[in-house]
Image (cartoon, rainbow, N blue to C red; front, side, top):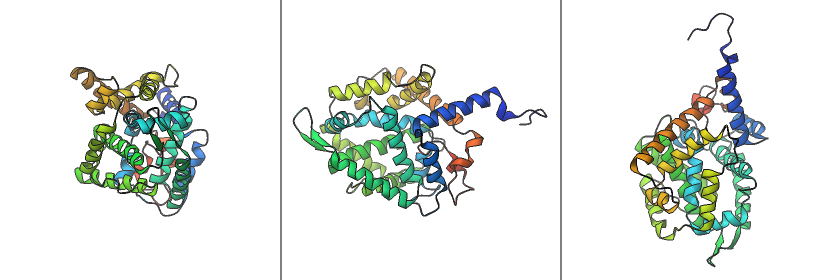
Length: 315
């Protein structure tokens, strides 16, 4: 598109608003040290577990990850022992952005960063997991490094990330690529201590189905859902865009999960939330594909790979 002579398209009010929104969103997700961390992830030379051609890179670099994180939290809350660990040891209400930033750092480092940095961070997280243990309200003990709980958390995340990508991603995966994605994200969790993670989409769905008898709604789960859906720590101006992402997260939840969390609605209502979720993801994608940000998100050795400039967990 041609521009009048002397007019800088990057200085238009729309472009300025876009850059401002991108900066605010990046600051929320990446945190005050986000720029330094992004520089290390993208610019540090060295071998990496994945490349821009890998499905796990494509999924975790897409804007659909923003809503996928909300979906994963809602689904994970339905396991009472996993939720007990969050309620007892997490500061998600006092520092929700800090929790989001740590999660973003883990996903981006293990997906896009060097193997050395990924292994260092995984060792740190495993140490944290060993210290997270307690007793749930029903009297059952829990440990964050319990393989059964690791399996639930992993599968709820993997299924949420993949589902949202296939529904709202810029380039949905083929069936074969989706199976590869499940195996690749499973390899990360294997480093965290998860034995035998699912290797295919079919296996992933079967594991989640096997968890159904263990799921229940607890007061802590309802409180977390209320906070995530209705009481996000956002300004009034930012809440409409966030609400669109929540719509997509809720619309794509399994029906049993929506029912347990009291989020059921008519078929028409769910379809409407689905459309709104797509609109929200497209909005985030547009905001974060500012041409001025592309170079900052290209890893060393992949300067000619446009996928590296996408806008998901590695932003």
